[in-house]
Image (cartoon, rainbow, N blue to C red):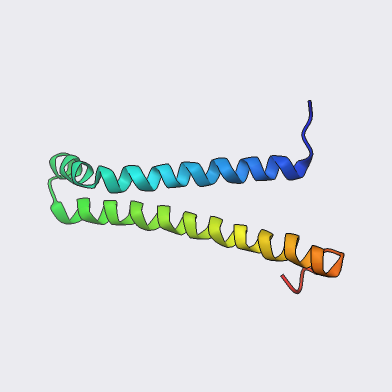
Length: 93
């Protein structure tokens, strides 16, 4: 059975958000272990700290992007359409 595109978008968004939240949890939970592994493999503590910091930054940036997309969909797809009766123009978005 073929789903409408809107339901596919919601499912894809939900899966992407769940994966990013899982990645953030794993990075935060295994922070010390990742640092120790990188220190033993690379030998320098500062590089290990930098790599873990970049992993955190990238994962939080992806989560922020997904949250902005969710707010955009909530405000302009749902609220604007119910109040005005039509979709918001691209310039307004």
